[in-house]
Length: 197
Image (cartoon, rainbow, N blue to C red; front, side, top):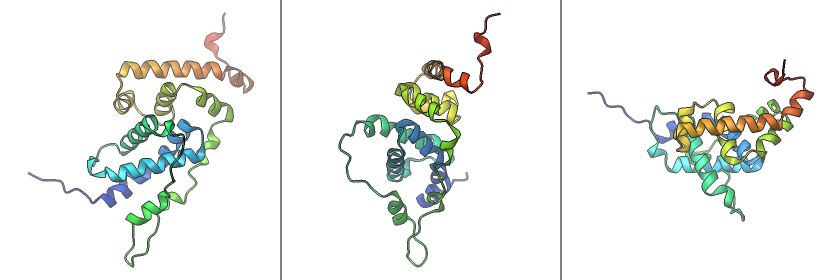
């Protein structure tokens, strides 16, 4: 019987977890509505992932695993902090676990690219309406419509029945649609279903 040899934690971090940093940042930004807070949330997520990397199952969905860590931290601790503790520089954390042959540290290329370029895809009106959604609706909407998770994946990550996920997503889309109706009309979009013949 063939046994699989687990890669070392460094390889798992670099090959599976770090490539998810961009969608993770997008998710964090949509949750917090603040660029710096989103960066802090992503940093904390990776710190927690590094600490528990031994529990990560190779070949599973790294995006879902990291999103779950981020969501749990956001719901359970991050949003309730009033006095922020001293911040940790995530690049320094990565440097401590990645050193080249001569012993000098180097940060991976993931942090040199522009992780905020996606913001230009959504208008200020849409971002504002998204931020006004109740958190329980906003999280489901982001996961389904912006991050393309399946209902089953969302249900598993949020530990909710799939019917609740569908219901929250439906409600979130209705609320967002109502909030953006005026903006959509100004942009030339028409809801033909609402036109009476």
